[in-house]
Each structure stands twice: as structure tokens, then as C-alpha cells.
Length: 176
Image (cartoon, rainbow, N blue to C red; front, side, top):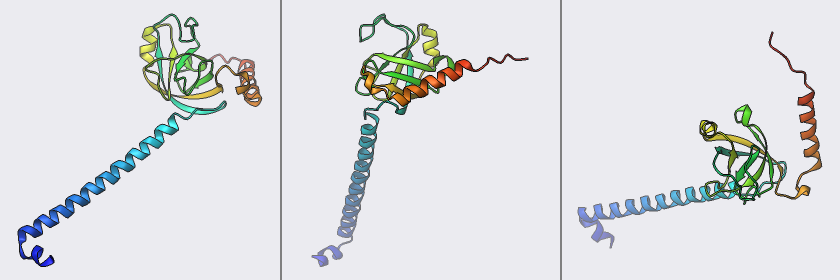
């Protein structure tokens, strides 16, 4: 058999091209499969349910339309929408790393078709402000997960109240 392949230049070219093509296809399949596996692992990590006290990075947007949330409560400042698989309705979160007027504590009372995975949508009354906020990265501290008050750890609550009392007790400095 090796004599037949070595006799003709055409056969050598075909054999080499076939071997090279097989190698490239095998390599591409392996690389694509490993990229898919990494993407799947990242998606699984992103959709893992957080616990009370968790500090997570979320994409933050704002909404201004509507009158009633998915939980039946009228919309107002301090309400946020989130993926119920990650942050169930009733969860209390602290939002950081946004402009100062939007940082604060929010209650997850709404859901939405566009709010999936690590995405939080905060309610802002003014639509122009909501558009100005755009899409930003925010850090979310989960203070309570769902309606269960036992999901909040006593140490976490104490730290939050101490931090709030310290901020209120700090004297206001006026520019001179």
C-alpha cells in the first residue's frame, strides 16, 4: 500500500491534504468544545443563587414605566426588578458603585422578561433620569433573600445599622 501512495505525486498531495484537513478539523472541534464548556461553566456560576451577605457584580439599568409591580405593589422609589431565580421577590439589596443618588437599599418587588441573570432594574420616576443612567455595572450586597426574615444574619444587620448610625452621627462639614 505504501508503494502505491509513494508512486504518484498526486496521491502524495491528496494524502497530505487529507491528513492536514483532518488535523485542522479535529483541532477546531476541540477548541470550540473547550470554549463552549468554559461558557457553560460561567453561565452556571452566574445563575447560582446567592446567599444573604453575598457581594455580587450585576448589570444595572433603570425603568420608569408602569404602575404596578409583579408582586402587586404600586411602583415607587426604592423598588427594583430582578431575576426571581437569583433574587426572589421580597429580597432586600444594597446597591453600590452607581452615581450617589442611585446608591442605596432597594427591595426586589418586580420581575420582567428583560431582567434575566445578573441584571438589576431599579425604578426611577423620571424617564429622562432612567435614560441618563443607562446600563452600568453595580455591586449588589444581598441583605435578605426573599421574604424570609431568617435569611438575614444578625451580624449583617448589626453592621448595617452601625454603619448607618455612624453616617448620621458624622457632623456635616460646610465648605469655607
